[in-house]
Image (cartoon, rainbow, N blue to C red):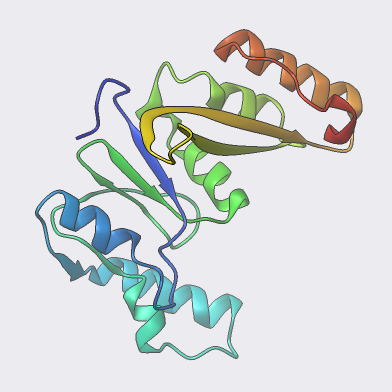
Length: 180
């Protein structure tokens, strides 16, 4: 299912609303169910008490601790784990959390150079957007490209990160003036 790339990363869709179905969808894709993961629920409850005392644990929030059966968990500094089903890594959609989680777990991604770039440039925000290509009939042909965005206050550092990413992955720089 993962294909020749080795890894699939999902971001978003693990929140408390009805349309947050990433855990369930990945579990279903691998023929697994989902179950309440008590340690994650306990961590969530602690996080709510300490950081959001005005919020009350409800069924929607509890759904965020319902993970794919037999998934592997990688932990970061917050309450949310990275849930891993085979080589599919399920992350939250909040960019700062994604960066933190990948940085805290970079030993699992040895050889993935983008983590080094992120770690070396903490004042720069990196975004990643996949664009599926379609022919004129609207049929997807299973090829895609990824657009990386680099944002920061220091134009020199933003350009430096952009140049590193081009060196690592190929591609070209688009709209450099809008990057700052």
